[in-house]
Image (tube, rainbow, N blue to C red; front, top):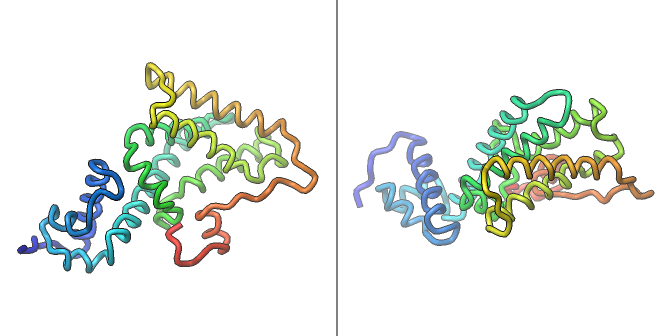
Length: 223
């Protein structure tokens, strides 16, 4: 195979774009680095200069997807933010809409647990945590309810997204989906505000993202 001429960095981007297209067609595991290389028009050896394996390519794509999601959610929160909880509702709506618009790629991100993401882009967890911190500062969420609240909200929003993507829950219109997200987010906040913490405090949840931020995880993780 005669490799196509690519400038520095262009081949890496082309391989990532091709991997994303293949995931939409067949899922995370239904293709090889050799096939991705052939689609781009280069030899596998050329691809190996950028990615040591197919899994390395998939992990890099997961980080790119995560960066795009973080930017999208940060923008949604910023545009909707007011004195109330509209920013958090916008976060939930943005997350669910993203999952419904691109379910194959959304599943890919979760499967590869790309908690690290692009350091130059806002991480979705950081966006969520910052908005919850703001709700504490403005008195919309009691400080006692804040520990671990990001994981509670994430579980509620992601749970709804997964049910919708898998077709286990259906709504007639996108507007109805937005209304359901609004209800889930607001109900979750009400529950958080009313629930008294146990004497020993809430257990501390962890994720690849929080482990990376606190330095508690494996430095070799992508998360």
